[in-house]
Length: 595
Image 1 (cartoon, rainbow, N blue to C red):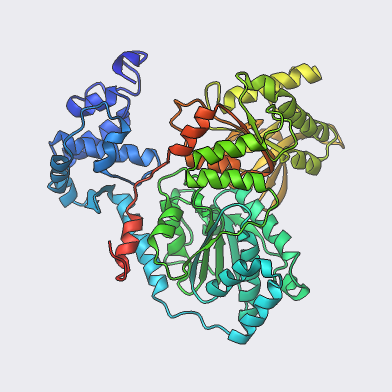
Image 2 (image 1 turned 90 degrees about the vertical axis):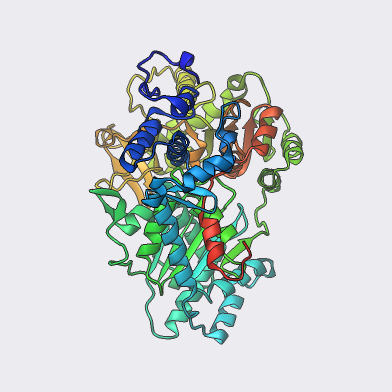
């Protein structure tokens, strides 16, 4: 975006009073007016006149908006190679000599520039993890552990999970990673059963907390653990009865006066003996810092997730940093064996994860039987120029199924039908965006049913909660449906939250949006039986390997990928890189690691 592309001279993206490098980068669309104003203000307060340093300040502010916690000047030119970037050597020298660095407003370390807040959070996360690892190992009843592992994992096919539990039982902190179908939930359920039995042998009562970043992810964690618990022997099932899950915000105790601080902190720790956090890839650096300061040092912490998925919407890529930064001593446990029957989906996901574009295209083409999105294979590849005509029947049938149950007042059936199909988009706006496709599906419904859908809260409308409301007990990411109550015909919104089904009058909910389609970012932490992934064109900067992988792994039984082969190959090749100092910091804290 250049100045000529702006609507007018008063466009909010344009910092009209800026000049020099800041004005050039603002005109190019790299920096927003807010980035420029932050840089100028810090420069004025800190006595920094060098425009290259001010450019670095503006760029690190931009980096936080884009999900990174710092700026790597050596790689900054990749943002827009056509711009006139400062010489890296001179730029770094100016940053090192800056009074802003001397004052602690900025921090220069590992070739990375941090704002003070995120530098402090990185240091705190590293220090807390190092302190937990330095504690004496938990006392383990070896005969009881051996017997429990044989009982909980009698099948030799789950030797990897048994080994993971054996290792996790001997340490305070465990990072459990693995792709879809590798048995992460099976491992968590087995670990909890084993740890409870270990505590019982010493006469202790164990308090367990399970949490996830969103309400939908928390509900799925609870359901998955309950399903795995049902497969355990009777004595272990009895130990895990009544386990529930919540959002991280609810676990830590949200405060209405501060969005990044909680009731539980270093001076008021969580009372739990075991804390399990699922979908850790979605946890930001700020939230991880708040979690680690709230968990008691002698409490077990189990962080579970898939590091190849999209990172947090907020700044940080903590799970990836932990996997790559923690020493190879068993703290990080990677599960690799797949236990699902969806071999074609797994094959595609692995090709995406490993960056093998030829194999990804081959998996898509081999799995496709009709190319229309209605075939019976696990993988469909739709390359039609008009995706609307190719997908209309599938998407409309899914929406009609939700509507039928909603009109009958059957909330459970309507929510189950909602989870049968999910249309995922990379963008919110434009022809490949959520807003366009929500309108398109509503138009198709109107044609089929004859209902013009004038009422915002029409029966059968799928909804997505977009903000936490602790007074109502709803959380960002909760999904639901508008149903017609059988007793009086009134419209009600039924949500499936972490604590079960919730029923509200539509007027009580405001932070919701229609969910015939949803963004891939919003879909993290959830799954559907069939997932349709609408890839944007090759010019989209959102199309990355992590985005593509996350979308594909939302499918339980079938995935339909809509787009061109060129878009697929570009998506596989492009990485979502987030500079971070946490990985280097963790390595530096381990004397056995050569930096």
